[in-house]
Image (spheres, rainbow, N blue to C red):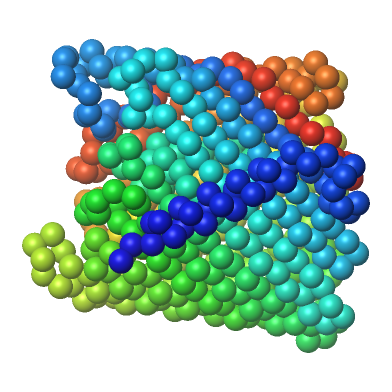
Length: 424
Protein backbone atom coordinates (compact mmCIF):
# COMPACT_ATOMS: atom_id res chain seq x y z
CA UNK A 1 0.00 0.00 0.00
CA UNK A 2 1.29 3.43 -0.85
CA UNK A 3 2.18 5.95 1.83
CA UNK A 4 1.28 8.98 -0.31
CA UNK A 5 -1.42 10.32 1.95
CA UNK A 6 0.56 9.87 5.13
CA UNK A 7 3.66 11.71 3.90
CA UNK A 8 1.66 14.37 2.08
CA UNK A 9 -0.26 15.13 5.25
CA UNK A 10 2.89 15.08 7.39
CA UNK A 11 4.80 17.40 5.09
CA UNK A 12 1.88 19.80 4.69
CA UNK A 13 1.14 19.93 8.43
CA UNK A 14 4.77 20.46 9.42
CA UNK A 15 5.39 23.12 6.78
CA UNK A 16 2.19 25.02 7.58
CA UNK A 17 2.96 24.98 11.29
CA UNK A 18 6.45 26.36 10.80
CA UNK A 19 5.29 28.95 8.28
CA UNK A 20 2.82 30.23 10.87
CA UNK A 21 5.63 30.35 13.40
CA UNK A 22 7.73 32.41 10.99
CA UNK A 23 5.28 35.31 11.27
CA UNK A 24 5.75 35.58 15.04
CA UNK A 25 7.93 38.63 15.72
CA UNK A 26 11.30 37.72 17.13
CA UNK A 27 10.72 40.05 20.07
CA UNK A 28 7.78 38.03 21.37
CA UNK A 29 9.28 34.61 20.62
CA UNK A 30 11.66 32.80 22.93
CA UNK A 31 14.71 34.92 23.50
CA UNK A 32 17.17 32.38 22.05
CA UNK A 33 15.22 31.77 18.84
CA UNK A 34 16.12 33.59 15.66
CA UNK A 35 13.88 33.86 12.58
CA UNK A 36 15.73 34.50 9.32
CA UNK A 37 13.45 34.86 6.25
CA UNK A 38 14.45 34.49 2.60
CA UNK A 39 11.82 35.48 -0.01
CA UNK A 40 12.15 35.62 -3.81
CA UNK A 41 9.54 36.99 -6.21
CA UNK A 42 9.85 37.41 -9.93
CA UNK A 43 8.89 36.69 -13.51
CA UNK A 44 10.56 33.92 -15.54
CA UNK A 45 10.46 32.96 -19.22
CA UNK A 46 11.33 29.38 -20.27
CA UNK A 47 11.50 28.38 -23.93
CA UNK A 48 11.08 24.61 -23.26
CA UNK A 49 9.97 23.76 -19.69
CA UNK A 50 8.88 20.21 -20.63
CA UNK A 51 12.20 19.44 -22.38
CA UNK A 52 10.19 17.96 -25.27
CA UNK A 53 8.76 15.13 -23.17
CA UNK A 54 5.15 15.86 -22.17
CA UNK A 55 2.61 15.69 -25.01
CA UNK A 56 -0.54 16.78 -23.20
CA UNK A 57 -2.42 19.69 -24.78
CA UNK A 58 -0.89 19.34 -28.25
CA UNK A 59 -4.05 19.11 -30.31
CA UNK A 60 -2.57 21.44 -32.94
CA UNK A 61 0.92 21.49 -34.39
CA UNK A 62 3.37 19.76 -31.96
CA UNK A 63 6.35 21.61 -33.41
CA UNK A 64 4.65 24.96 -32.86
CA UNK A 65 3.96 23.96 -29.27
CA UNK A 66 7.61 23.03 -28.79
CA UNK A 67 8.57 26.58 -29.83
CA UNK A 68 6.17 28.06 -27.28
CA UNK A 69 7.82 30.11 -24.52
CA UNK A 70 6.19 29.76 -21.10
CA UNK A 71 6.02 32.76 -18.77
CA UNK A 72 5.34 32.44 -15.07
CA UNK A 73 5.17 34.57 -11.94
CA UNK A 74 6.84 32.87 -9.01
CA UNK A 75 7.38 33.17 -5.28
CA UNK A 76 9.91 31.17 -3.25
CA UNK A 77 9.64 31.84 0.49
CA UNK A 78 11.62 30.23 3.30
CA UNK A 79 12.42 31.03 6.90
CA UNK A 80 15.13 29.60 9.11
CA UNK A 81 14.18 29.20 12.76
CA UNK A 82 17.28 28.53 14.86
CA UNK A 83 18.00 28.14 18.54
CA UNK A 84 21.70 27.69 19.38
CA UNK A 85 23.32 27.19 22.75
CA UNK A 86 26.75 26.28 24.07
CA UNK A 87 26.05 22.53 23.80
CA UNK A 88 23.80 22.24 20.77
CA UNK A 89 21.31 23.73 18.36
CA UNK A 90 17.89 23.18 16.80
CA UNK A 91 17.02 24.44 13.33
CA UNK A 92 13.83 24.35 11.24
CA UNK A 93 13.64 25.68 7.69
CA UNK A 94 10.15 25.53 6.12
CA UNK A 95 9.93 26.57 2.50
CA UNK A 96 7.13 27.10 -0.03
CA UNK A 97 7.40 27.58 -3.81
CA UNK A 98 4.34 28.60 -5.83
CA UNK A 99 3.89 29.94 -9.33
CA UNK A 100 1.25 30.74 -11.92
CA UNK A 101 1.60 30.71 -15.72
CA UNK A 102 0.36 33.33 -18.15
CA UNK A 103 -1.06 30.85 -20.70
CA UNK A 104 -3.83 28.33 -20.06
CA UNK A 105 -1.95 25.60 -21.95
CA UNK A 106 0.76 25.72 -19.25
CA UNK A 107 -1.55 25.08 -16.30
CA UNK A 108 -0.11 21.56 -15.85
CA UNK A 109 3.25 23.16 -15.06
CA UNK A 110 2.04 25.16 -12.05
CA UNK A 111 3.71 24.28 -8.76
CA UNK A 112 2.76 24.31 -5.12
CA UNK A 113 5.87 22.89 -3.47
CA UNK A 114 6.28 22.53 0.30
CA UNK A 115 9.46 21.59 2.14
CA UNK A 116 10.63 21.26 5.70
CA UNK A 117 14.29 20.79 6.55
CA UNK A 118 15.21 20.31 10.20
CA UNK A 119 18.24 19.40 12.24
CA UNK A 120 19.07 19.08 15.90
CA UNK A 121 22.38 18.47 17.69
CA UNK A 122 23.39 18.12 21.33
CA UNK A 123 26.74 17.43 22.97
CA UNK A 124 27.40 15.74 26.29
CA UNK A 125 30.84 15.28 27.86
CA UNK A 126 31.85 12.33 25.65
CA UNK A 127 28.87 11.90 23.32
CA UNK A 128 27.42 14.01 20.51
CA UNK A 129 24.10 13.07 18.93
CA UNK A 130 21.85 14.63 16.34
CA UNK A 131 19.29 14.13 13.63
CA UNK A 132 18.48 15.58 10.21
CA UNK A 133 15.03 15.44 8.64
CA UNK A 134 13.89 16.44 5.17
CA UNK A 135 10.23 16.44 4.11
CA UNK A 136 9.04 17.51 0.69
CA UNK A 137 5.86 17.63 -1.34
CA UNK A 138 6.70 18.91 -4.81
CA UNK A 139 5.56 18.84 -8.42
CA UNK A 140 7.19 16.57 -10.98
CA UNK A 141 8.82 19.56 -12.67
CA UNK A 142 10.62 20.45 -9.43
CA UNK A 143 11.33 16.88 -8.35
CA UNK A 144 12.84 15.38 -11.48
CA UNK A 145 15.31 18.08 -12.58
CA UNK A 146 18.25 18.84 -10.32
CA UNK A 147 19.31 22.36 -9.41
CA UNK A 148 22.81 23.84 -9.32
CA UNK A 149 22.24 25.10 -5.75
CA UNK A 150 23.34 28.56 -6.82
CA UNK A 151 21.22 30.22 -4.13
CA UNK A 152 20.90 27.53 -1.46
CA UNK A 153 22.87 25.02 0.55
CA UNK A 154 22.99 21.55 -1.09
CA UNK A 155 22.75 20.13 2.42
CA UNK A 156 19.06 21.09 2.23
CA UNK A 157 18.73 18.27 -0.32
CA UNK A 158 20.82 15.53 1.30
CA UNK A 159 20.32 12.94 -1.44
CA UNK A 160 19.70 13.29 -5.19
CA UNK A 161 16.82 11.14 -6.47
CA UNK A 162 15.81 12.99 -9.66
CA UNK A 163 15.07 10.88 -12.76
CA UNK A 164 14.60 13.43 -15.56
CA UNK A 165 11.24 11.83 -16.44
CA UNK A 166 8.84 14.74 -17.12
CA UNK A 167 5.66 12.71 -17.63
CA UNK A 168 2.30 12.97 -15.82
CA UNK A 169 3.13 16.52 -14.77
CA UNK A 170 0.00 16.76 -12.61
CA UNK A 171 1.52 14.21 -10.19
CA UNK A 172 3.21 15.12 -6.93
CA UNK A 173 6.29 13.52 -5.39
CA UNK A 174 6.36 13.04 -1.62
CA UNK A 175 9.75 12.56 0.00
CA UNK A 176 10.69 11.88 3.61
CA UNK A 177 14.28 11.51 4.81
CA UNK A 178 15.25 10.81 8.43
CA UNK A 179 18.94 10.58 9.39
CA UNK A 180 20.02 10.26 13.05
CA UNK A 181 23.62 9.92 14.20
CA UNK A 182 25.67 9.57 17.38
CA UNK A 183 29.42 9.95 17.96
CA UNK A 184 31.16 8.51 21.03
CA UNK A 185 34.53 9.85 22.13
CA UNK A 186 36.98 6.97 22.55
CA UNK A 187 40.02 9.10 23.31
CA UNK A 188 41.22 12.66 22.87
CA UNK A 189 41.60 12.09 19.12
CA UNK A 190 39.42 9.06 18.27
CA UNK A 191 35.64 8.81 17.91
CA UNK A 192 33.20 5.94 17.32
CA UNK A 193 30.76 6.94 14.56
CA UNK A 194 27.22 5.59 14.16
CA UNK A 195 24.91 6.85 11.41
CA UNK A 196 21.55 5.77 10.00
CA UNK A 197 19.28 7.03 7.22
CA UNK A 198 15.82 6.15 5.94
CA UNK A 199 14.48 7.50 2.62
CA UNK A 200 10.85 7.09 1.51
CA UNK A 201 9.79 8.44 -1.90
CA UNK A 202 6.31 8.04 -3.39
CA UNK A 203 4.18 9.50 -6.19
CA UNK A 204 0.49 10.36 -6.16
CA UNK A 205 -0.33 8.90 -9.59
CA UNK A 206 -0.03 5.46 -11.19
CA UNK A 207 3.24 3.54 -11.03
CA UNK A 208 5.40 3.78 -14.17
CA UNK A 209 8.15 1.34 -15.17
CA UNK A 210 10.57 4.29 -15.29
CA UNK A 211 9.37 6.09 -12.12
CA UNK A 212 8.58 4.08 -9.02
CA UNK A 213 7.90 4.49 -5.32
CA UNK A 214 10.87 3.28 -3.30
CA UNK A 215 12.42 3.07 0.16
CA UNK A 216 16.08 2.93 1.13
CA UNK A 217 17.48 2.27 4.62
CA UNK A 218 21.16 2.35 5.56
CA UNK A 219 23.36 2.07 8.64
CA UNK A 220 27.03 2.95 9.03
CA UNK A 221 29.52 2.16 11.78
CA UNK A 222 33.01 3.60 11.81
CA UNK A 223 35.90 5.29 13.55
CA UNK A 224 37.02 8.90 13.14
CA UNK A 225 40.48 10.21 13.93
CA UNK A 226 41.73 13.78 14.41
CA UNK A 227 45.28 13.75 13.05
CA UNK A 228 46.07 17.37 13.92
CA UNK A 229 44.30 20.68 14.26
CA UNK A 230 43.62 20.89 10.50
CA UNK A 231 43.41 17.24 9.41
CA UNK A 232 40.93 14.45 10.05
CA UNK A 233 40.16 10.97 8.73
CA UNK A 234 37.45 8.34 9.12
CA UNK A 235 36.66 4.77 8.05
CA UNK A 236 33.13 3.32 7.88
CA UNK A 237 31.37 0.02 7.27
CA UNK A 238 28.00 0.55 5.54
CA UNK A 239 24.98 -1.70 4.95
CA UNK A 240 21.79 -0.71 3.11
CA UNK A 241 18.56 -2.12 1.67
CA UNK A 242 16.70 -0.66 -1.33
CA UNK A 243 13.16 -1.63 -2.37
CA UNK A 244 11.22 -0.33 -5.39
CA UNK A 245 7.56 -1.10 -6.04
CA UNK A 246 7.20 -0.92 -9.84
CA UNK A 247 10.20 -3.15 -10.59
CA UNK A 248 9.82 -5.42 -7.51
CA UNK A 249 13.47 -4.59 -6.88
CA UNK A 250 15.16 -5.65 -3.65
CA UNK A 251 18.83 -4.71 -3.35
CA UNK A 252 21.10 -5.42 -0.37
CA UNK A 253 24.42 -3.58 -0.30
CA UNK A 254 27.46 -3.77 1.95
CA UNK A 255 30.51 -1.56 1.62
CA UNK A 256 33.45 0.21 3.17
CA UNK A 257 34.57 3.81 2.72
CA UNK A 258 37.32 6.07 3.92
CA UNK A 259 37.34 9.85 4.30
CA UNK A 260 40.21 12.33 4.55
CA UNK A 261 39.68 16.07 5.08
CA UNK A 262 42.13 18.90 5.58
CA UNK A 263 42.07 22.66 6.02
CA UNK A 264 44.79 23.51 3.51
CA UNK A 265 45.23 27.14 4.55
CA UNK A 266 43.25 30.13 5.74
CA UNK A 267 40.94 29.99 2.70
CA UNK A 268 41.01 26.49 1.17
CA UNK A 269 39.63 23.19 2.51
CA UNK A 270 39.77 19.74 0.91
CA UNK A 271 37.77 16.51 1.25
CA UNK A 272 38.42 13.06 -0.21
CA UNK A 273 36.13 10.03 0.20
CA UNK A 274 36.60 6.65 -1.47
CA UNK A 275 34.67 3.42 -1.07
CA UNK A 276 33.83 -0.03 -2.41
CA UNK A 277 30.31 -1.50 -2.40
CA UNK A 278 28.90 -4.94 -3.20
CA UNK A 279 25.20 -5.09 -4.18
CA UNK A 280 23.05 -8.20 -4.51
CA UNK A 281 19.68 -7.59 -6.17
CA UNK A 282 16.54 -9.21 -7.54
CA UNK A 283 13.94 -7.58 -9.78
CA UNK A 284 11.33 -8.33 -12.44
CA UNK A 285 12.28 -7.34 -16.01
CA UNK A 286 10.02 -5.98 -18.78
CA UNK A 287 8.94 -9.50 -19.80
CA UNK A 288 7.93 -10.35 -16.25
CA UNK A 289 10.87 -12.69 -15.65
CA UNK A 290 12.69 -12.59 -12.31
CA UNK A 291 16.36 -11.52 -12.38
CA UNK A 292 18.89 -12.32 -9.65
CA UNK A 293 22.36 -10.79 -9.92
CA UNK A 294 25.16 -8.95 -8.09
CA UNK A 295 27.57 -6.10 -8.87
CA UNK A 296 30.59 -4.42 -7.29
CA UNK A 297 31.07 -0.66 -7.59
CA UNK A 298 33.54 1.91 -6.38
CA UNK A 299 32.58 5.35 -5.10
CA UNK A 300 34.56 8.52 -4.53
CA UNK A 301 34.25 12.22 -3.80
CA UNK A 302 36.90 14.88 -4.31
CA UNK A 303 35.86 18.39 -3.33
CA UNK A 304 37.50 21.75 -2.65
CA UNK A 305 36.07 24.88 -1.05
CA UNK A 306 37.47 28.40 -0.82
CA UNK A 307 35.98 31.00 1.49
CA UNK A 308 37.12 34.63 1.62
CA UNK A 309 35.51 37.88 2.69
CA UNK A 310 34.56 38.67 -0.92
CA UNK A 311 33.90 35.30 -2.53
CA UNK A 312 32.99 31.64 -2.10
CA UNK A 313 34.06 28.85 -4.45
CA UNK A 314 33.18 25.17 -4.24
CA UNK A 315 33.86 22.42 -6.74
CA UNK A 316 33.71 18.66 -6.62
CA UNK A 317 33.82 15.43 -8.61
CA UNK A 318 31.61 12.60 -7.36
CA UNK A 319 30.86 8.98 -8.14
CA UNK A 320 27.98 7.68 -6.05
CA UNK A 321 25.57 4.75 -5.86
CA UNK A 322 22.21 6.39 -5.12
CA UNK A 323 18.69 5.03 -4.61
CA UNK A 324 16.48 6.35 -7.38
CA UNK A 325 12.86 6.39 -8.54
CA UNK A 326 13.79 4.64 -11.80
CA UNK A 327 13.39 1.51 -9.67
CA UNK A 328 17.07 0.68 -9.23
CA UNK A 329 20.18 1.91 -7.52
CA UNK A 330 21.83 4.37 -9.90
CA UNK A 331 25.52 4.82 -10.68
CA UNK A 332 25.93 8.60 -10.69
CA UNK A 333 29.04 10.38 -11.98
CA UNK A 334 28.89 14.11 -11.38
CA UNK A 335 30.83 17.35 -11.55
CA UNK A 336 29.55 20.41 -9.69
CA UNK A 337 30.90 23.91 -9.12
CA UNK A 338 29.54 27.15 -7.66
CA UNK A 339 31.16 30.57 -7.41
CA UNK A 340 29.77 33.77 -5.86
CA UNK A 341 31.58 37.08 -5.49
CA UNK A 342 30.77 40.50 -4.11
CA UNK A 343 31.76 42.89 -6.88
CA UNK A 344 31.09 46.06 -4.90
CA UNK A 345 29.30 47.18 -1.77
CA UNK A 346 25.92 46.71 -3.49
CA UNK A 347 26.62 44.42 -6.45
CA UNK A 348 27.22 40.65 -6.37
CA UNK A 349 27.20 37.85 -8.94
CA UNK A 350 27.15 34.07 -8.92
CA UNK A 351 27.61 31.23 -11.38
CA UNK A 352 26.89 27.53 -10.97
CA UNK A 353 27.40 24.49 -13.20
CA UNK A 354 26.40 20.87 -12.80
CA UNK A 355 26.93 17.86 -15.07
CA UNK A 356 25.95 14.27 -14.35
CA UNK A 357 26.02 10.96 -16.17
CA UNK A 358 23.91 8.27 -14.53
CA UNK A 359 22.45 4.85 -15.23
CA UNK A 360 20.58 2.10 -13.32
CA UNK A 361 22.64 -0.69 -11.80
CA UNK A 362 22.92 -3.64 -14.22
CA UNK A 363 20.46 -1.99 -16.66
CA UNK A 364 22.31 -0.89 -19.85
CA UNK A 365 20.50 1.33 -22.32
CA UNK A 366 18.78 3.54 -19.73
CA UNK A 367 21.50 6.14 -19.24
CA UNK A 368 20.94 9.82 -18.57
CA UNK A 369 23.15 12.85 -19.19
CA UNK A 370 22.11 16.11 -17.59
CA UNK A 371 23.77 19.52 -17.54
CA UNK A 372 22.63 22.78 -16.02
CA UNK A 373 24.27 26.20 -15.75
CA UNK A 374 22.97 29.24 -13.86
CA UNK A 375 24.18 32.83 -13.66
CA UNK A 376 22.74 35.71 -11.66
CA UNK A 377 23.51 39.30 -10.72
CA UNK A 378 22.06 41.03 -7.64
CA UNK A 379 21.98 44.73 -6.84
CA UNK A 380 21.19 45.47 -3.18
CA UNK A 381 19.33 48.73 -2.73
CA UNK A 382 18.96 48.15 1.06
CA UNK A 383 20.75 45.77 3.44
CA UNK A 384 17.86 43.29 3.07
CA UNK A 385 16.35 43.95 -0.39
CA UNK A 386 17.93 43.31 -3.79
CA UNK A 387 17.00 43.26 -7.46
CA UNK A 388 18.01 40.09 -9.29
CA UNK A 389 18.50 39.12 -12.94
CA UNK A 390 19.25 35.45 -13.70
CA UNK A 391 19.86 33.24 -16.72
CA UNK A 392 19.87 29.46 -16.79
CA UNK A 393 20.43 26.75 -19.41
CA UNK A 394 19.42 23.07 -19.19
CA UNK A 395 20.35 20.17 -21.48
CA UNK A 396 19.33 16.53 -21.06
CA UNK A 397 19.81 13.30 -23.00
CA UNK A 398 17.88 10.13 -22.11
CA UNK A 399 19.00 7.05 -24.02
CA UNK A 400 15.94 5.52 -25.65
CA UNK A 401 13.47 6.40 -22.89
CA UNK A 402 12.25 9.94 -23.60
CA UNK A 403 13.12 12.66 -26.11
CA UNK A 404 16.25 14.71 -25.44
CA UNK A 405 15.69 18.35 -24.66
CA UNK A 406 17.26 21.70 -23.85
CA UNK A 407 15.87 24.92 -22.39
CA UNK A 408 16.82 28.51 -21.66
CA UNK A 409 15.48 30.41 -18.65
CA UNK A 410 15.53 34.15 -18.02
CA UNK A 411 14.13 35.75 -14.87
CA UNK A 412 13.87 39.16 -13.22
CA UNK A 413 12.78 39.67 -9.65
CA UNK A 414 13.26 40.92 -6.11
CA UNK A 415 14.95 39.19 -3.19
CA UNK A 416 14.45 39.80 0.52
CA UNK A 417 16.90 38.32 3.06
CA UNK A 418 16.59 38.85 6.78
CA UNK A 419 19.65 39.90 8.75
CA UNK A 420 21.11 37.41 11.21
CA UNK A 421 21.95 38.55 14.74
CA UNK A 422 24.99 36.29 14.68
CA UNK A 423 26.18 37.45 11.29
CA UNK A 424 26.02 33.97 9.68
